[in-house]
Structures are given as C-alpha cells and as structure tokens.
Length: 438
Picture 1 (tube, helix red, strand yellow):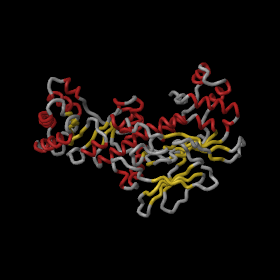
Picture 2: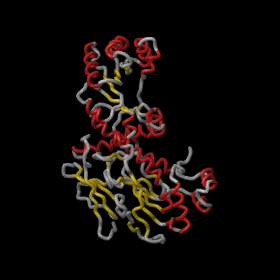
Picture 3: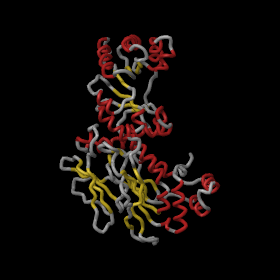
Picture 4: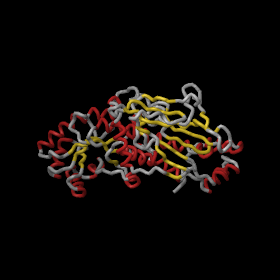
C-alpha cells in the first residue's frame, strides 16, 4: 500500500529543510489541531477521523521512490532527503476520541515531538479531520431530526470515490444505520443496504415484470421503488407481486409528505400494514425535520451529507502553540502564539474537560493552558492518549465510537439540538496560569 507521505503541501518540506539547516528542526514542539469557532450557526461539532488519521500515521514514511522524486524535482536538498528516508514519527499524540463533541478552541488533536517530526503531519491531519468531522457534524443533525427513524448514507455518487468511503464511516459514527457503499462495509464494517434504481424498472417491459424479478431474486422483504411512473398503480402492483409481507417501498420524488401519507393509506387498505416507507431525494436535516409528522419509516441521504450540509469543512487549523526554549534536550516548553487580527491563537499546551452540572448536563468546555484544568468533581476529561513514543496506543471499534457519540450528545443542553442558526451550545472557558504567556 502506497505511503501517504506525499499527501502534504510543499511548504512542509521547505520548512523542514530550512530548520534542519539551522538545527532548530530538533527542538521539542507542540502542535494543536482546533477550530477557532464552529461553522456559522452550528451548535456543536463531532470529532471524526481519529482512527483514519492514526492508520495513516502508522504508515507515514518516505519510500525510496518518493525521496528520489523529491530530489529530482529539487523539492528538497540531499541532507533533507536523507532525513526523510529515515523518517518515522516517534512523538506523542493526544486527542478527543472519535464520536466526542467539540466546540471552538477544543484541542481536538495535540502532537508533541520534534518540530521536524510534527510539522510534516499538518496537511494529513487537517485533510482527514476537516472532512470526516464535517460529515459527522452534518450527520448528527440529521439523526437528531430523524429521531428513532433510521438514516441511510447514499452519497457515493456525489463525491470523490475515496471521500465516499470516509463519508460513510463518519456518518455511521454519528448515528446513521447503514450505507450503500460496499467498500465502507468491507473496510470498516459499516452495515450496507440497497436494492434497485429506476434503471432496473425501465429495463423491463412493465413495472410488474420488474417487481416480480426483484422479489424473485431478493425475497418479499425487499424494497421496491414505486415512483418511476404512477405511484398509486405501482404500490398496488407491488403488493400484488410481493404480498402483504412486502418489506418496504421507496419514494424518491415529488411532495414527500403528501405522497407518503397517500401511500401509507393505500398500503394499509391493501393489508400491507407492516410495509415500511423509505424516502430519498435531496434530503437534508431540515427536510427530514419537515417529514417528522409524515408516515415515513426511514430516510436515504446523499449529497447534503457528503458535503457537510452547507459546511464542507470544519475550519480546523494546525498550529504551533509551544516549543522548547532552546535547542537543549532538557529545555522547558515555552508557549508561542500568533497575534494577527482575526487569526490570533492561544499560547501553551492545552488540556480539556467537559464541565458538567449536578444534573450531568454539560455547562462549558474548559481548556487548561499549560496545565490540567481544575476538576470541580463533576467534570469529564476529554483528551486521551493516542500515540506514545511513535507507538499507537488508542484502538477502538467504530461501534464503540458510535456509542460514545450518543453519550456525548446526550449530555449537551437541549439548545444543542435546535436546527435553527444559533450560538454554540457550550461556551469555551480558558484556565490560564499567570506564568503562561497568551
């Protein structure tokens, strides 16, 4: 499998080369990945991509072929090429585990290593977390709007083929029940589902013939697509072919509230009381919420999900927040920060906890700068050790991360579930000792 080492921006390597020449490359450094604020109008975000990032980090090395290419194109000089040929990440990483909710300033990922080791990870970390967390943050809004009704991820044809796999994984983590993407099933164990498209109906001489063919192949519990021609006639034919034990019918167009109501009435009249109604067709969280009163049993979501439902990135940045005071191996860390307008950062290595009230409802995101924040007895630490000395320490199943998300979301105040634009559900509070520069 090809190394992800070149999935990076050129300036990572030019910074590396310059710092190797001066000797500053070996200074201990702390980088953090965080969002300055949530996307406009969002109440909370969902961390996704931790597992994928760690998978890539464990394979992050430069092959002879890659090093030769960098030299041939004069991207790096000979000393830098030799350093890259021997590169293996040997530092420490902490982060929010997958499924956790986050807010502006949350230290979602903390990387401590030499500057040279850590700076190379910037683009990889940002590309994974910005994409996966954007999809998960959209997915959680959709599953909240859907309530107990399942959501199915169907966005493979609306994004890059590899992004589709990552999207299915992130959506499942945030509560989706299944995906249409088989690679996500094979690679990550996400449940897969799917039956037929309009092309299958159009292939046959009649809708009855198409339905009979599908039922013969897949059984009466299959889902029949009933809006290729006339919905009322298709529903009647579907029950005649499959019987009253038909698993489901799917609606993909039109006024879904009105059509679903009519179809439910018709199915019940035909005795197919247990036949479910699944709706698809450019759904997002607002459309799902609008269908809450309709007799719908499940939703298939594509384009809006894989594009983050209006926010295709989380705005995560990866910034140096602390470095060794000198080149000495035992030099203490010193906080560093940008002061540029609208892009200022907070200096110092961070820790975080979720401040909970006596009722176990979250009240604030508390970020300690330069030290652990003070736990008042009800609080929950957020950072976990992911990598120590270059060795992966965090291993968790996707189902465990999925369960964590439900727990984390459940402890947020009720305002977090509103789909209308609004302020973050929790404020971020910094605890900063006087001796730590900001």
